[in-house]
Length: 200
Length: 200
Image (tube, rainbow over all chains, first blue to last red; front, side, top):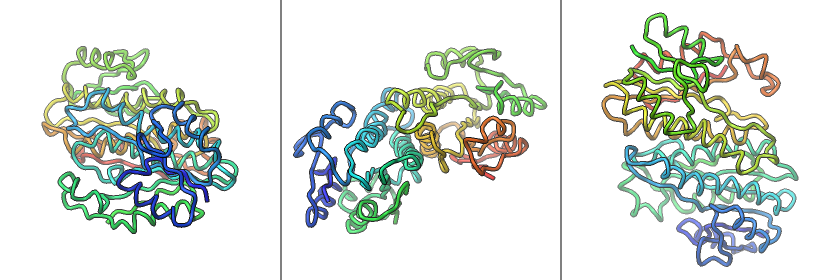
């Protein structure tokens, strides 16, 4: 399989890329230092990426950001950071990416537990995650050529837990093997329109 | 109670307004033909509204739109219709409205079944509904002064069913009494951060 991983050199992206590289042709794209560079907030940059990669069997996105801040400090513009990146960046990846996806290919997006079980300072981050869940369920109804679209929504992952644990009091870290398996279920399975939730 | 209903002259808004008018001081705002006119896509218009109404005990929003279109015809700009109106319009209502809300006051937003159970042509509409669900759960964690924030998410309501039933094959209409009760639960109850789902 030819698999494009956007955000393939981040904390999760690294593990996913290593796993798939064992038996697949993996292409790593990232904001910087990827085999290809892409800015997912910019549709033209996404198109340019696919013009360079050509057709693929699977697209995995583990990229996109949103502003974390106390609710009373989040400005209207702050919300648009997440809207342009993690929300519309991933929507545009599906819109544009499906044109470069082989028959029966899959797209896997990434969100997180905030969509369902938020913590403080995440009004904006939770919003974009929840938007992607509902978008994916809806868009999956209309995909053509056997294409599939799923979302991986994880709790705080083991490899990032030390860094983020103070933001998630009482949350349990997700073992990296389960993280990998979530993406494998989407790419290698037959599910479509599924939110793969691994919360411990 | 002094209750501001934005979108108070629409299909659902009319019924809600009639109910609350029996025992409350109800102010109707709408895009056109309200006691006060407001464009929720514009933060300044929202501020101007509250500067005119002054403090209220409850804010109910039954306004906001999104573009319905087949997934392959939705442009990036089309998604921003819903983002600016039903998504950020309601987010801005909470951001700004809380400053005009009395102690222990409530804000009630509106979404719909598409967030959880979408139909075709609703990739954009589902997205903004789902975004509001997660936003409200997160923002509710940080509200001050005893303020509460809930969302009413209904299936196709009885009064709009003839008009929309072809878009929702097999969906069951929600009786208008249940529609009213959903808003009453939020305004008169003590719940906070709840998505009140009435799907039949």
